[in-house]
Length: 274
Image 1 (cartoon, rainbow, N blue to C red):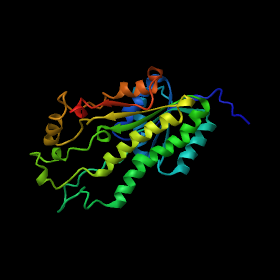
Image 2: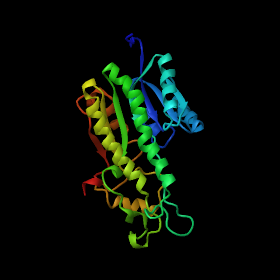
Image 3: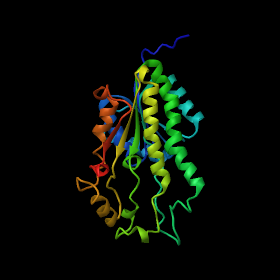
Image 4: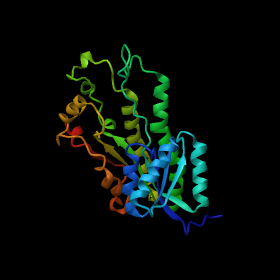
């Protein structure tokens, strides 16, 4: 029996919504008058995120779910709950990711290829890549049935080029560097861009678009020397503000990008140009 899709509410689902950039994506997508479905493993932070949004937009329709995106049964369960509420995920933002930091405490090297913990590597790939695929599998299938939808994979400039390890030393001396940016983040973001292109061609005939957004570094609480070292490598001479990606998310989610799929929208201040 063919499913009747009439009288459904359109929604944007954001994974990792309680994270640093999750709220920015949510605030951007409210401009499209969509329901917001916010998911994250940290339900306490997720509730705070919802409260912050409602202070600015008291009439926003927001649903929150505690969710491990690596657990396909959990994702399917959320999909069923949304179906009962007649909510269709029209926009999927794969934002959840583990961004491993260098360990500056203790002796010896950390993050190095030679000594990297494979258990950590698998966990990071599970979240950054496999978790995103599970969400695409579950929610993209519904988009394909309806012949509409936009999938936005949050990539990184680290998915376009390898990290310059020298920036993590105060004097940019890689020979003296003890703590390295681990390989898993860059590898998973490269993989996410590959997945973007695959899905774009797989469901293109179903009018489902899939694009990636490659961020540059966002200024938050980095050390002074790291900010200085990154800035030297950015043609615009600064790190991004956390609000500067909102319009790009809005563009990829809306009909303004209706003829764009399988692409990587790069907003990195020009860092990957050199």
